[in-house]
Amino acid sequence: MALNNHNRKKFVTGMTRRIAQLRAQTELSLDFAIETMFQERMEAYLHVEEGLLEVDRMLVVVEADIEDICEVNAARRLESRLEFIEDRFEEFESEIRQRPRRRRNKINLFNFFKEAAGGGGGDPMAPAGEVRSAIQAFEVLDIEFGASLPVVTRAFRERAKKLHPDSRKGDRSSEPELRKIIEAYQYLKNEYFGTGGEESPQRPL
Image (tube, rainbow, N blue to C red):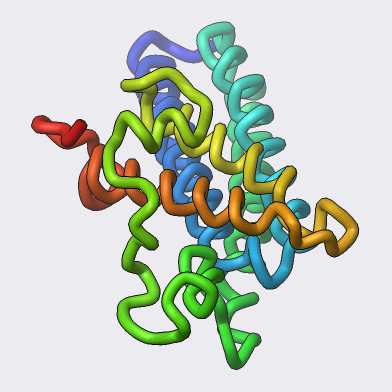
C-alpha cells in the first residue's frame, strides 16, 4: 500500500527528528563515557565507544533510505530498523551510566591526575596551569585553531587513547603528555566553547 503525501511527509519528519535526537544523545554519551569510564575501565570504554560509533553509522544508513520510502510496509521496516538502533543505544547508555554507580571510588577522567598535579588538595577539576590560552590548547591537541568542538573532542579521544597506560602495556611514561592534553581539552570545552559545550560568542584567545 502506497503512502499518501500527507502520511509520507509526517513519516519523514518524525524519522528525521528521531535520528537527530539519537545522534545528539550518542555524542553526549560518548563525552560522558570518556569522562567517567576512560581512566578506570579502558576496555569497557573502548567497547562502548565502538558501539556508539556503530550506532552513528547505522543512523547514516537509515537516514539515507528515508527519502526513498513510498509504501507502508517499507516505512514499517525502516522504522523497525531505527527501533533496533535505539535499543542498541540504550544498551550502551545503560552500561555507561551504571558502571560508575557500581564502583565505590569513581574517578573522573579530569580528576585522574589530581594528586600528581596538586598533592591531593584543592579543586580536582581545576586546570593544572600549563595551558593558559585557547591558542595553546589547540596547539597541544595538534589541531587547527578555531576547529569545532566535535573536531576537538575527536582529536582528544584519539590522542588520549594512544597515550593511556593501558594502550602502552602499563607504560606510564606518557602521563605528563596525557595530563597536558586532558587540560587542553578541558580548557577548550569550558573556557573557549562555554558551559555545556556551546560555542561562546566571545571566545578567549
